[in-house]
Image (spheres, rainbow, N blue to C red):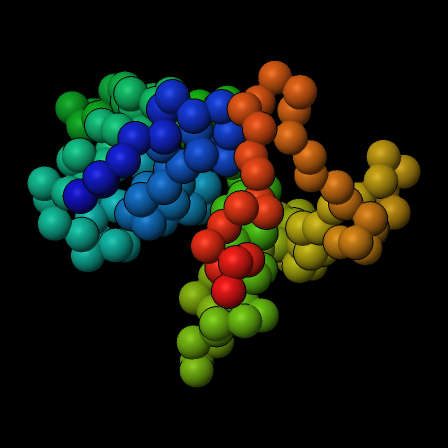
Length: 162
């Protein structure tokens, strides 16, 4: 159960988490990237309760990340497909997968491998790069408050006083 909404925060990360912050949501997006389209596909893959899956799918549709429509084959079933907004989450899902493969992999190895479809080669690590494509050191990447964002004073915390 969510206790705080991030919808009014100016932070883009917080606002993104408002839509995809549930672990189920991220796994649904992963499955949609791998080709899952129907309710039963997501349920079979995730082992998720029907009511939870229904809620998460509806949230993702409402957020414009998935679109719900008639099945492509003309059957009576409805299908869920990633929208442009949803497809743009691909680097996030790939980065999470690559991080997990490196730091918290299952003893039997990862369950998925992210590859170039045509060649089968693994994708390179998602990492900040210059416009030229050259990888950057994390120490070269900056994050700063936008001038229109409310200021934050990190120096007045209780921890600093002790």
